[in-house]
Length: 78
Image (cartoon, rainbow, N blue to C red):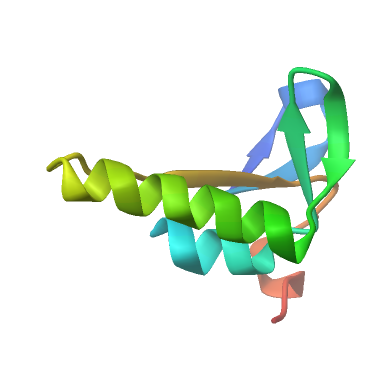
């Protein structure tokens, strides 16, 4: 699910939530305790491995991503 939000940081940003594997495949950056970093293939693999471990324990995971300055939903393409 995607939503355009306004007023958040005075921009029109898109917030995307969904299955971690689908959201993570689209990510190019991530936020860590050390700030924003580029998302590498290794980062994606480690994250998906950790999510798989949590799922094996019966926990459900949801991923959330932000697309800054997305404008209007109709302008966003794959």
